[in-house]
Image 1 (tube, rainbow, N blue to C red):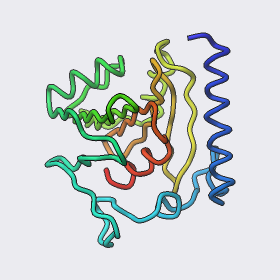
Image 2: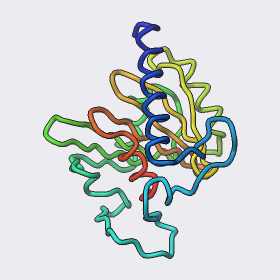
Image 3: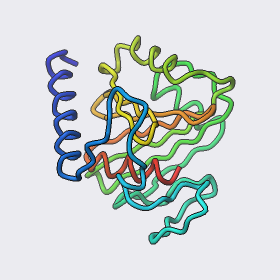
Image 4: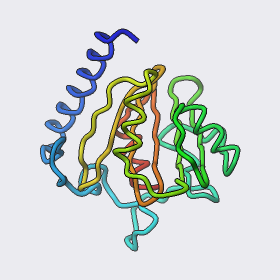
Amino acid sequence: MNKNLEKFLLLILGVGLVVGMILTSQVRWTTDQKEGIPLEEVFGGNNRKDSNQQTEVEVEVNEAGFPKRIIDLQLDEFLVGQEAIIEINKDLEIDLELLDGYAGYYSNAGRGEVKVFISELDSFREIEEINNEIKANEQFAETNFFMISGEKIYFTQKEGLNYYYYQQGNKVYWIAVSGVDEMLVVGHLINIL
């Protein structure tokens, strides 16, 4: 991809985030500090699995905890184990040495696309080490990150999809989106997974 186009797309994404923060009064989002605002304030509610709080909206999930729907996107395909590991490694084109994996593919009649991967690492690796592998892969655009509630969320682009990824323990969560409201989808998934 042309470097100028990559810079332009990252600029558009950055401007969109800033405008979104201003419009939603979420100016405590940060790109360089380990603090932020609670996800509940950004995205509303708290659907995390480990939460004891009830939410107003119940989300129907499959046996692995993946939502069956994300906004107007339907879960079309779901892979577990070795099948998912093969798909994750093929899509990301980096060697993660996975112990287990989950892959969910969502769409809404061709108007949008979301891929969700959960990669369970064989041994603990810091997300920064994985991010360096992505930076070394020419298929991906330059990476960047932002902070939400102390959680570092990385993002990059590859083949028309915007990838957001973050780590919890030995699991790395990957959300690739195209043609949908990215922040709404990413926020929804961060709250659920």
